[in-house]
Image (tube, rainbow, N blue to C red; front, side, top):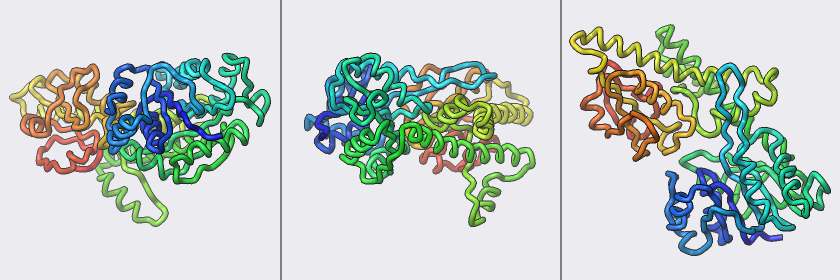
Length: 419
């Protein structure tokens, strides 16, 4: 069965590029989002996020009539769920619990328009077992249809999990060329999912079961988190021992079987900072290394703030004629990684906001990828303005524009090693 109409639920950093990619292959695509502003923006052929080449793709597909955005799901042949899966905020003494309420809300929304022969794919990164929960929820809402957990291969509705594995800033390219892991609840579910993705995917579509597909994405990001934690911990050790961590890592990486990552101010984003908790919450007594890595990376912003406070003290010792209120601090970069506009789980934003709350003087923010900040006391300024009036420079995100800056200032905290 071919897929002529495809719905994508959630038009964020993954959903919108995916919807546009299907539409570019002359499929009728219906993008669904609860954000009316995002829907209106897309229907004008514009985008509400920053992603190279996506603006041209969306503009072309909307103008040609292959992509439209709505707030309420409509009948389709396939439904891809690409909504957020954060974790619930709780106190530090406990393990964060994944929040899959957005997925549940998406399932409730599409249930009334499902028909026999439809395919439902969960793309959102999720705790193990979430795809099975989707099948259970749908069976409850649509008792007139059959589902894989009830009848196996002959189900009216096919359900699978296919995690996204793309890099912000390169999403359009990687959607096409990256391999995909396809985890169907039955073989038929997987085969139909492969047929759908092969509309534009040039990489391999590797079939497994739903639980393994869910765990694959969590494993990929947890592995990265552990590796970053090693680099971040190493940077704090080197600071204590008066060793240049950047030189040290460069030397260690000359070993043919060593590849240490670069440290930073912490770990952010919608994946690496969140996904390891999905594993830890399921197996808290076993996932010891993964849990420890999360704690190391979550602590790194606190360490950076301690370095800033120490710099303020040192500056005032050197300039006794000044008060703390007269010390200007500039924070370079607020996003969770370079050259994007994504603030999700950004340690840089948290650090800058904390400095702004605690410091009685002026705190400037230099973020070339964002025009308006969320609720904060930070003031956005240009690089030139910052360089002309800043006393303490704090490098948090190595945007390409910052690498061109030549600083001779004494009071610099460089968490990325570019200065």
